[in-house]
Image (tube, rainbow, N blue to C red; front, side, top):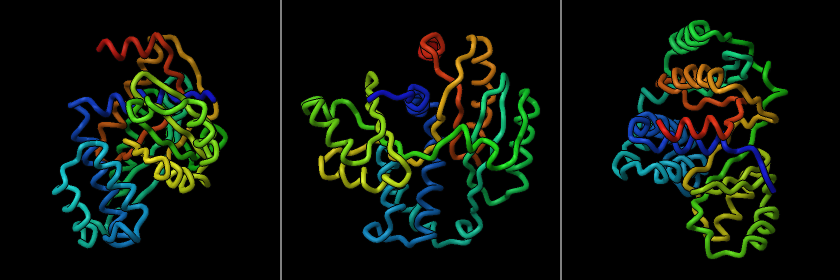
Length: 252
């Protein structure tokens, strides 16, 4: 099976850079805190918390930081956190979907609106991009974990677990499932004794749009602005990361 996950893998490679690590950790801490707030601090009875802790370990979050985030879930600050999504268009017609967590929705909306307007984009209404993005489970597996496994047998096992697409990159393999098969794939990977470095529910574009390099760099500027905002947990888009653009990013 083949997919269009280069954009997702670039996100993970960028997230691994030192300059991005603090932002990634901040967002994971919020995920842990909210999961502990909503369903309690017990990992065995709280699947969302288990998932958040797994992602924290994949991002090398220190153990004591994870424990503090879980404890924080019972505090007043956690009670004020809310999750919201926003949709709009960036430069050159690229669709952008934002997942946010905030204790001040007015600030978050104002910042998002400002970033769109200052970067030749526009904030739309929720649901306006439903024909462009599908909610998917996305599992990132390090290739070294599967290097000794028979590729054909592994693919059959993953299909049995609900995999729709499997795409192998240089360092990682991405597995995409329907939202409904998210738990099934988690169980399958556990059965295969494969630990994902990232396990997420993501907005995956049904199709992507290729842009000339200069236009693509315009889009990356607004994406970077959104990613730098502490209230924004994740940024999804439907711009194709062409080989030319990937080469440019990897050389920076």
